[in-house]
Length: 297
Length: 316
Image 1: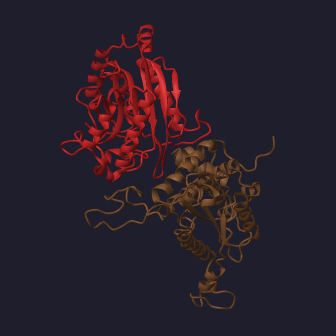
Image 2: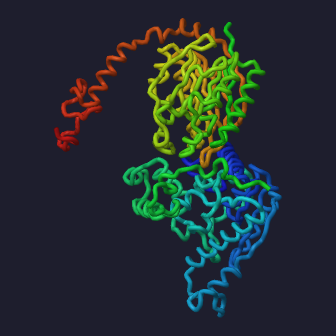
Image 3: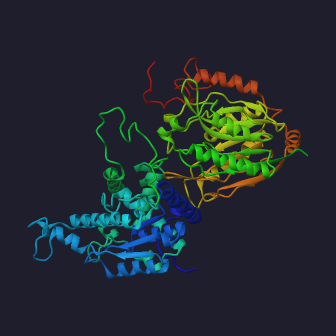
């Protein structure tokens, strides 16, 4: 037997055939209820967006999918070629929109000041990374009008739980087929649907600066944090029980704090309750219902 | 031989689209009739979709609603189970399953157990039914209706069988979840339901007909997997997961007599003992009488007293 492509904790192993059936029904159901037939997504060259592109293709056909490549000047060439390989294999439409000019117009580039003025070039990597994610969101929502499609989310459960996402940036979408899959499970399903191996095995990265990887930035591996989150969240184990399973108390405490600190990123912002009926509190309707789909045509 | 052809309508209702779902029911009734079915079963809230929230009041029907009468009129020479939001005269909303026979509404079961935990929020939007009863049917056997969560409470299939049901029909909108490779069927929900259905059929020596919807409401995918289980707990048919379809299953109702004579579990039931124990347990759990089986100092509903040295939870 050949060595596995990636580390998959046994308790996270899922039935990929059923997962694909669910995501297929989900994607078709979301589009039908909204009155759309097409999907647009940002393709980074990483495994998450590659998997969503494959799942959308499986659900509605490549002819209904637009993949948008959104590199910044410093984005890695390997990411771009991996994304292009996905487009080539799927045979879907694609567009390249370089966000460098948009981002530099705000922060400035080189010696030149941007819209932000003199302190622009001093912006931290965090600010720049968040801004890039939101520029990508703005492009995707603009192109969704041109393409006539819904924006598919490509964030996974791990990054959502620990808050490794940009609010209204990479987490902005009309629906998300993989948001309940841990990173390890994303890889498992990606392998099952035939995402290129190079994409599955490479170190996940937000690609905000050369050489950046998620795991070096947060300081733990996806396999470890996926296991911990699974037992902590899905299986409701207490910190004492988690420690008894062999997780280091400092690791447990840190991840628990990350999860709690990111609660706001996973929820619709609260509205001050004033009137008799308030959206989300006592005005509760399905997102899509008769009359809510856009008119076709 | 008492042959019966059962049609399992494993449909994908459109959320809130009553007219479209009524049309679909009419078409499938006609298809089932043409296929020789004597009993057609549709899933829970098949006429409305499941995740209604405040839409529930907008798609509710009174039992005298002409739309229901029109649908019932299509059941001449047939039995059909359909499910919808029923509004009572005092404006309570129930999740209802109705047995339509020979052109009329023959019996209505209001869902008794409304799950309000995990991903469920039914009690917020619906009133709970309070009757569990079997009814005779034109099929020549007693029929007992239950809706989804009703079958996660042991008493329901037992009461239906003791009341004369020989065919237990559960209509469901069961959301698929817990997709894990360790589950027997890859899907935790399916594994659990299959266990229950086989146990109920075997322990009540009855046919169990389970119809679960497919399709998607919002985040939730419904997994289908509708089934017919024979009175010995044997699987007669299992519909595929997630595939919409009208599945025809032939059974012999004479198997009921054979099984009940060979394995006379119902004959040997002692409902009077159950009743006496339940009366005692209810009073003890309510704290009305001393719990005769508990250690001194135990709280109502618990037989074990707090460990020595720990403070009592409630001072009396």
